[in-house]
Length: 121
Image 1: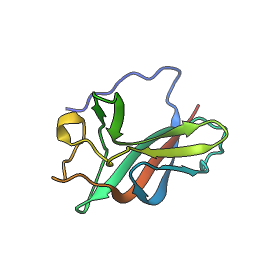
Image 2 (image 1 turned 120 degrees about the vertical axis):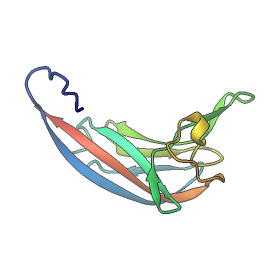
Image 3 (image 1 turned 180 degrees about the horizontal axis):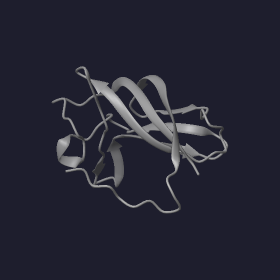
Image 4 (image 1 turned 30 degrees about the horizontal axis):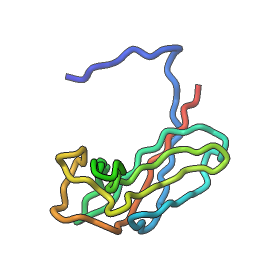
């Protein structure tokens, strides 16, 4: 059964774009211009491709050094655009820490894409 949630202030439309970040590597930062303008707030969802499957990554913190060492995140940074930041040691944390898919080994490079939405009132 589908659940329909009530919307506040009517039904907004969404503008959508899919950005290809190419192959990303661990311990790296990537920036692309937002398709809606670098000063327009957007919602981002990042995925990597491993073993023929696109999936959203989780994250894993090293409690000894208190740093997040495995992840891929994306978001909007005002005046910069859409940013992808990868973890220090790998691109994912494994299913036990939030990944939707566990490729079985740590991945240090993979194709990356970012879904970008702009809310239009």
